[in-house]
Each structure stands twice: as structure tokens, then as C-alpha cells.
Image (cartoon, rainbow, N blue to C red):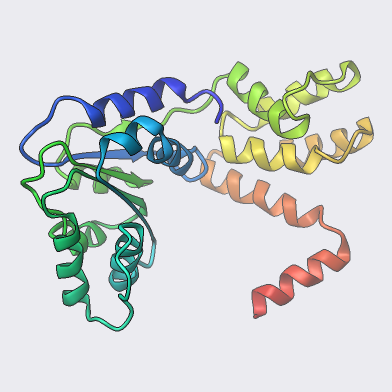
Length: 258
């Protein structure tokens, strides 16, 4: 992870200090590709977090949420076995019992709708002092609806952070070769500080060392002139398909059909 240490440390400190009567709900808010899930995972895996909480559980929600799958994911994270055929109500009851009396951390990743929050919030015991719930969401309305002033808006990377991330992917953190330095910086600038875009473009260039290849990718990225960051990100993701060999394109399309 590049350039997010201050946010990670702030989240870890916030979750492990200053107990209140109810679990702390902290939404991490930002557009797709800005690093919400990466940051949440860094916090979730932190040794201080692991030693502080009795139970840590993670569920990925997504746009079309499935309540039963969310409950199953959380139960599996809490090491509860044999939870396959129960109804939603039974699963919710099992989850509440598995968390009762324990200091827990729940991560609900990629939550798009307030209905998804409503569907699971009652499963989390409210009297557990020191517990926490992390949400990642692209939707500021969901963050507000969760009823908390603790939301963390994700910022775009600055130029130095962007270059460090690009270098870490394309060159395993080594310095850019002098002949590629100028074109490399131009490519990074065209990514507008969005981590997913930087990683995707750097991944494309990882196996390319000819300046002509870099200029070709730079031209492609520059052509994505749009004021919509989501659209720009989608176009860059499309680049990763365009640069596949023909046999790999066919393989990917067959998987898509399957």
C-alpha cells in the first residue's frame, strides 16, 4: 500500500481507543478504484487490530446484495461451522449469538445501498463496548444513513504517491530507467491520482521496456478525455483487455460466456 499510512494509522487508533456504549461505525467513502477495500484490508489485517478484537469478520456486499450470503460470509469469518441450509432468520440469530459478549470488528465491503445496511445491522449486538464496524462505500448517502460523523473520505493520490505506486508495480520499486522517466511521468499524470488506474497501466507496462510501447500506452491513456472519473477508469480497464494476446482474449471471452 502506497501513500495511505496516515489514514491507516488514524483508523487503527480510532477503532482501538475511546470506547463508547455502542459499536463505532466508520464508513470509508470514495469512487471505485480509489483504494477503499485496500485500506480496509490493511486495517483488518493489522496486528494491533487482531490482538485488540476478540472476533474479526469480513463480508463483501456489492451492488446486488444477497443477505444470506452476507450472513454466511460473516459466520465463516467468526469460525462458525455447519451454516449452509439455515434460513436468513436462523443465520442472523446464529451471528448475533456468536458476537454476543465479545469485542468484535465487522467489515462490510462495497456496500451500495441503505437496504443492505438495514438488512444486517440488527445482527450486531449494540451493548458490546469497544466494538467497531467498517463500511466501504462509493455512496455518500449510505455513509450518512449509517448515522455516524466518523466517515473517512478517500482522497486522490498526489504526484509523488502516484509515481511511487507506478514504480512499485512496473519496476518492483526500482528507479525508472532514465530513457523512460519522462514518458513514465506523463503516463502517471494522465492517471489523475486514481490508484486502480495507476496499477492497471503499470501492469500493462511491466513486461514492456521499449519506449515505443510506452508511447503507445501513453497515447491510449491520453485519449480518455472525460470529466467522469468512473468512465475514465472503465476505459483504462478496457486497455488491459486490448493489450492481451489474441488467444488470451478468446480465453477470457469463453470464461465470460461460461
